[in-house]
Image 1 (cartoon, helix red, strand yellow):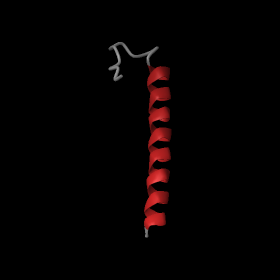
Image 2: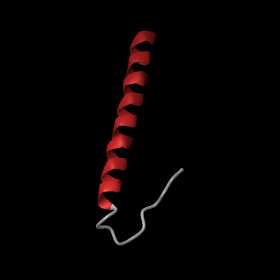
Image 3: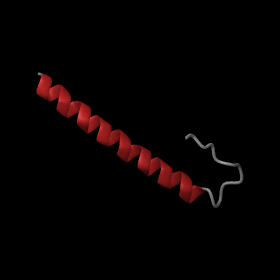
Length: 42
């Protein structure tokens, strides 16, 4: 059971990072045509 939870946690973390990277790329590519300023979180 513990091994399965660890695998799920690591895969979930990698998946979340990949989604964030894709969203950031879409935002950067859409900035040129977007009139409103994008919200920056840091």
